[in-house]
Image: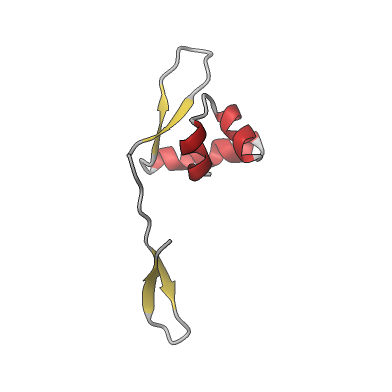
Length: 78
């Protein structure tokens, strides 16, 4: 979802949902979660106006620990 959002720059949560072909409620929940951990911010609109999701950073690197069958933990890269 982040990849699609950064290229298209949606103007609202509903616009973001259309861009990724997902249900509005799911996208709203996901974007709210990303806002809570500081990955995105919402542009401040006036009362009654759509919230505009924006990435909080120019780039984002994510390391995901992966447990191997022998119990060792490593990381994977994109």
